[in-house]
Every structure is written in structure tokens, then in C-alpha cells.
Length: 309
Length: 317
Image (cartoon, rainbow over all chains, first blue to last red; front, side, top):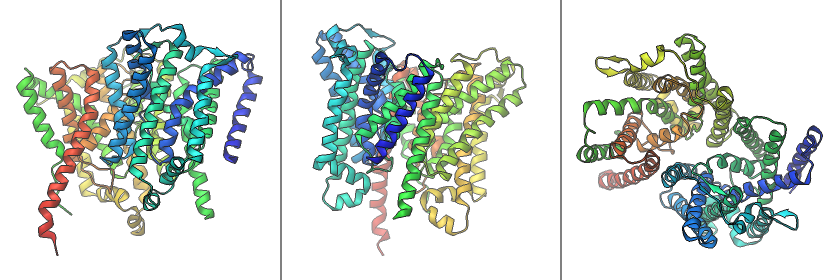
């Protein structure tokens, strides 16, 4: 928890700098907007966090959000039913997770290769499926999920809070959660002490896919339109959020709370760049630098703790 | 040393050629076959050094973005009427710098390769967008398009470049110790270090080569498009990784071969071209490469099992 506290201080420092450098940063509209954006990044990154806790990775989350959102939008338009569309998005997202899980546990592909192949496969299918079309204009009731307010707070923040609570309890206080950490810390030891490693890994990748499907629906409600390329810019920030949040790529160390703080940090940086009128071209560069710095810190911390043992 | 086995992709390649020659009219024409070679040339330049990185149990996801950036740099210099040689040198220099940075991150700092290179991917992509203001860089003059469109002995220039790259790298690997060092970095690094080899230098060198080749590939990419574009090669590193895996190089124990990668690159080239001839959309072609990787892996694991079954009676001591 000390780590999360340090990271929160970083968030406060960035916020303080932006408060002094810009006029609009510390308005309730902008702050709520930052939290809403961070909520979306958190939803995408939450399942990814679980996969990284098992010393794996899910590079396909962004592309999964893209195709799930396009599918959900198509079904919504075709059936005039928000519920059916949402179910389609969630089901497809989870299905991608099933495929990822099978490639990793059955074909024994390294997770980054399996999910990286999945990324490009999904991208290709999405472009083919959409054929350059944009699906646009949804019912106000559905759009409220992405852009509405309840008691003055954006609805995605409630969604995020609900999943943070459930996910937090799930990872910290259930046997499943303990097993996820155990697999990441030492897979062989986990197997020998009776953890069904393959079954748990399958479940983790399905959860990651399902969370991408869920994020797709909230994202769709926020954008109010679906296009083939909406998932592409989401992968790097999601991974950045997890790593900034202190979840170790080497597995077994990290938390969903950390990922939320990571998502907040990243959103603040992007928000600050927007407010300071920095060109959007700089965003992939800055995100890339942040990813490298975050992993570097992870590596150094790990080496120190190993030296101490 | 065991005899090098034929990668499963070789069977796939033959199968694909038979299928496309049967169902696609015009697939087997000489012009189209040369076209496949030309289309595959850029990919081969990326996939050859990628093979070496994969053999060290690493990965370079930044190659596509670095190639795009190098293309933008090259096109910008040509647009400002610098000489072609200077533009190529600058492109290679850009790639070299990124490769060195990747190597330093992975080897010196111990950052896992796929995340280190994902980070530099973002940096290269950002730089390409900033340098080009998100636009195509056009008006690059005639020298490069003329060179790219040239032929020698009836074979197009890009194919000569690709063949030369393969031969040079192949010879360098078999006549120097580089080859065995590279597979030892992936297979048994500890032993290499104990034997007094400066493994780190070779390891960083492999990443540097990756970057430099990505920069050099801008010569062919920019020549093909007669322009530099900041997102021209985004995702091409996926094709390169796919070609390496399809070609039978594995992420474990430093096994792999450049010849296998050539087969992998040609398989992908034939697949894309054949699907084009059959008028399958280019988006689905991307998806089909993902499928191709899995099919190749399954074939390889079946071949592996068969081989072990055949050998096991003879090997019992």
C-alpha cells in the first residue's frame, strides 16, 4: 500500500502543477472529465491487470474493445434493443478471452505472442466487418451510460467504482485472487500446491476479454459512434496504466487500486497536455516514455528487493 | 547438432501455391510471381534481423514505427533536395539509434523486450507524426523511384536488395561466431558468459541490427510509395514476427534459422497476393496471417511429435 501512496503523491503533484499553469484545470467540469476518462481506461486495464498478475499479458484488449463496440453497435441498430447489443458486446469480448486462454494454455504460446496475434487478427476483422462505415446515433438512455450524470457525478465513475470494489474483494479476499497472485509469483510452486493453473489462467483471460467487452459498451455510449479504428489508440495507455500503477510485469505483485491510480496519472498527463495546447501528435511519444520509465522503476525495485533477500 | 528440419511452413507454402494457381487466374504468371517477390522484399528486411532477436528470446515491436519514422526522415531530406545517399544514411542512422536504445533498455536495464519496444514504438510513432505534421511527405524527386523501379537481369531492384541482405547475413552468421553466440544468448546465456564471451555486446548488437535494418528498409518502402508517411508501416512488425514464427524459429532455447524465415516471408507474401487475386479484402488478409501463425505452429508440433516417435526406438540406449 505504501507504493500506491507514493503514486498518489505523484498524481497530486501533477494536479498541483496543472492548477497553477492553467485556469481551467481546477474546475469541477474538468476534474470530473478527468475522472470519467480515467474510469474508461481503468475498465480496459482492469482485466489486463489480472493477466499481468499471473506474469502474462493481454495485448489484445484495445482491439477487443474496438470490435466488441462495433458488434454491439451493429446489433443495437439492427434490433433496436440496447440490451441485446450490450449482451453481444460482452459475449464477444469474453469469446476473445476464451480464444486467448486456449492459445496460452492449450497451444502453450507465450501470452504476448498469442494476444499480439489476436490484436492484429481482431483489427483485420474489425476493418472488414465495418467496411469503412460509421455507426452513429444511439438512444439517449444508452448514451447516459457514457456521458450522463447521477447526483452530479458522471455515470462511468459509478461503473468504475463498482468494478473496483468487486474486483478488489475478488483479488484480495477470495481463493481465486490468492491463486492468481500465486501463479504469477511462482507458477511451478502454485501447481505443486494444488492450484489448477490452466483453469485459472483460462478464467483470467476470459475475465480480461469480458472487461474489454464491458469497456466497449461504456466507450460506445460515450463516443455515440462506432468506427473500425476506435480500439487502436487504447492498448498502449491501458498497459501504461497497469505499469504506472505498480503492477509488476514479472507477476505476483500489484493491485487494481494501483491500476486506477495509474489510469488517473496517465489521464492527468494527457489532460494537462490538452489544456496546455500541446499537439495530439505528442501523445504516443509521451505515453511511450511513461511506459518505459514505469517498467524501468519496476525492474529497479525488483532488483533491490532481490538483493535484500 | 541435429540436422535442420524443414519448417512446417514449407508444406503450407507449397499447398498455398497449388491452391492459388488452381483457383486464382493469373496467380502463376511470371509477372505476378516477381510481384510477390517485390511485395515481400520490405518484410524480409524486417524479418531477417527479427529472427535473431527472437532467437535471443526477445522481440522488437518498434520495427514498423521505426521504419515509418525513417521513411519520413528520408522523404523529408529528399524533398529538400539532399542526395539519395545522404537520405539513406540518415534513415539508417535513425534506425540505428532506436535499435541501440532498445538494446540498452533490454540488455543493460533488464526491461522485458516486448514492453521496452512497445514504449519505443510509441516514441517513434510520435516522432514520425510530429516530424511530418501527420501528413504524407511528397515531392521526393525522381532518383529514388527510378532506382526502386529499376531491373537487372530481368529481376526488379527490391528483390536484389532482399537477396543481398539474406546472403550477407547468412554468410556473416556461418563464418563468424555471431550465429552460435546469438542462439546461445537465448539457449544458455550463463554458459556463454562463463566461456568469457561478452554476451551483452552481442545482445545489444542484435537489437541495433534490427533498428538499422528497419531504417534501411525505408529505402524500399519510400521508393514504393514515392512518399514518406508517418503511419505507413504500422503493424508491419506483426507480419515480421509472424514470418519468423511461421518459419519455425521458436521463442525457446534459441532455435531458429534465416532460411526458415525466408520461407515464412514467402508464405505470407503468397497468402496476401493469392487472397488479392481471389479478391479477398485486405482487412481479412491481416486476420488470415494470425490464423496462418496458429496453423503453422500446429503443423510444427505435429511434425515434432512424429519425429520423436520415429527416433525414439533408435535412441534407446
